[in-house]
Length: 59
Image (cartoon, rainbow, N blue to C red; front, side):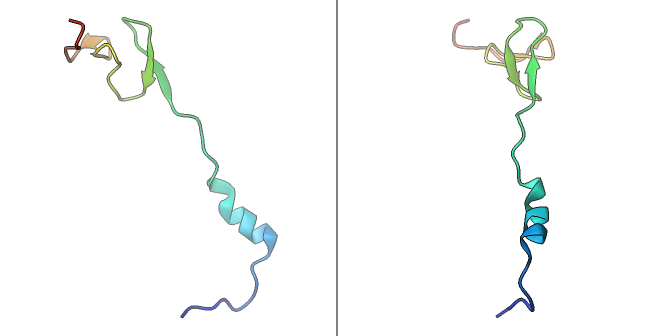
């Protein structure tokens, strides 16, 4: 069983956790419809990079 040799100070502990904060999701705006969606994902209306790539239920 691994046991640490000495206690890790709060400063060292917090330095280790400095990259754990969450960032905002990257959101893109579709050129043709103007709706927002996640980057590198197809929008709800079926557009990707200004082109219709899938058919949606309403069509």
